[in-house]
Length: 275
Ligand SMILES: [Zn+2]
Picture (tube, rainbow, N blue to C red):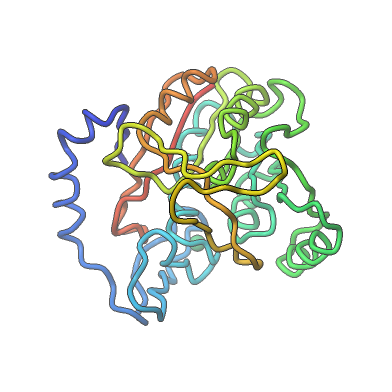
């Protein structure tokens, strides 16, 4: 896995990187891709799905832990970044998705892992809690807003937030909150739909004072597996790395997680930053 720090550096090598990745064949629809899961360690393989084509980011679910390529990529980057700096088993970590196979699988590696969902409704939280119990995790789903997490300052060793920032109108507030709750040396790992050829991020929608979402162009909603679309506010480019430094992070980079033998036949962008 390689880290890039700027659009220029990536542009210099992107053609070569894509050529290397493109030489690895994607599995056929309906088949199982062989490999060892970088998160749960299973060798059962990865389901290529039954849809129109194989999605090397949102698909390729591990047949053992159920995590897709993006979740496994982020977990691998997180666990690697934490190794050495912290005894992982004693780590205080937070993941911004609790009712998910990633939470269940990651909690086995990080018993101190806490999670939450952006879910203000009690009924919805109860339903998600029941899902969690069925998957062997006791406890309740908590509601947290990532712009105001409610953790003590410098109280966490690691924070992970996957495909959430693009849905937060003031994402800079979320970055500042991540910086606040992480201890010096703590690790932030995040994924967003990343526009790798774009230097600047683009804001495509704003939240009006009356609470309605106003898109500047074509509306863009992302699927939420538990129903309803979520409006997308940002198309992130390389200035996201700068925004992280601005928020108080050091060594912010975009890591391209590419491990064909671990169910990642195409690179998946994972943002990694140290507090
Ligand atoms: Zn797995």
